[in-house]
Length: 184
Image (spheres, helix red, strand yellow):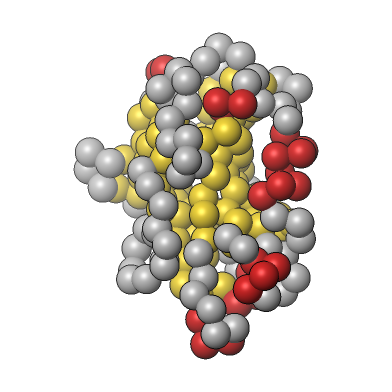
């Protein structure tokens, strides 16, 4: 049985290998343009910065240099039920400098298309065991992000040699570039 988290809640992840599934539904009729949401992963050290550029994992850099984090591909529409994008994590391979994995979802060309997360619904992040397809944790974002074009869904972090997940649900108006600036 999965643990359903509330914003700000933290829970231990007692599995070295798992998959992060991200899902959402969009209201394409409100803007006339199709939505393209993208999951990105910022793999950070103690200083809350990327150890190297290659630790920014997304559809154009699908695997971290240590092989611990892999983005399975870009979903251009978000259509259908279930996960829209997935990230495979193997903590047994994680670079020793890494203490945090930040999971962000952004809207591609949000400003041009006049789109924001207020037009996105049923957003969630879940962590599940891919071998059994059993959910470990799930966080459903319930806030109305009416001006934000990027949202940090959650973060996986190391504390006292244990890995935990925090349900973050924090929006940002600037998009992916603001996160790149923040973590570089």
